[in-house]
Length: 242
Image (tube, rainbow, N blue to C red):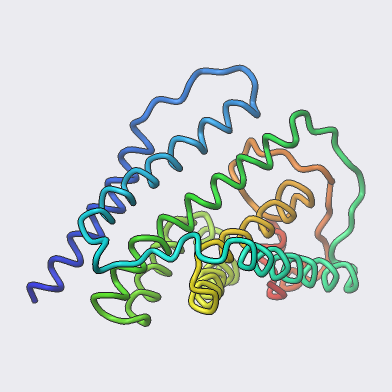
C-alpha cells in the first residue's frame, strides 16, 4: 500500500506539476501567428524538460530514461516507420475514394509551424513515455507502465471523446504503438520521430489530423463517403483505417 501511494503521488505531482507550469507561464502577446504558436509549444516543452531533469536527478541511479541511445539508428527507424504509417493510411483512403486533395494553401513561415509541431511531439512523448513510464516500469512492470501512461495520453486528447469511439480507439492504439516502438528500440527518439511524422504530414501537410486550431495546412483535403473509412468530421483520426 505504501509503495502504491508513493507511486501515485509521484505520478500526480509530475503530471499536475507540468500542467500548472505550462498553463500558468505567460505566453508573449505576438501578432505573428507562427511565432506565437512557437512560444505556446515551447513553454510546455521547457516545463516538461525541467520537471524530468528534477525528478530524474533524485532517482538517476535507479531509473534509466533511454532518451538518446543510438540517435542516428533510432531516428531512422522512427522516420521510416512514421512514413510507412501515415503513407499507408493515406494511400488506402485515396484508393477507396474517401480522401481527395482539392486545393493548396500558401503557408508563411511553414518551417516554424513544422518546428512547433516537433517541439509539441517531444513534449508529449517526454510527458508520458519519459520519466513517468520508466519510473512505473522500474517499480512495477511494463504492463502497469503501459496502462497508466496510455490512459494519461488518451486523457490528454480529450477532444477524441467528443468525436466518438473510433477516434478514442485511434488515440489509445497510437499510444500503445509508440510504447511498443519505445520498448523495441529502447530509445525515446524513435517514437518521437514516428509521432512527429504522423502529426507533421497528417496535419500540416494534409490537414487530416487535428492539432491546435490555429495550425495551418498546406493542402485542402476533402474526406467524404463512408464515415467509417473517411473518418467524418475528425478526418483521418476518425477513420477505422488508422
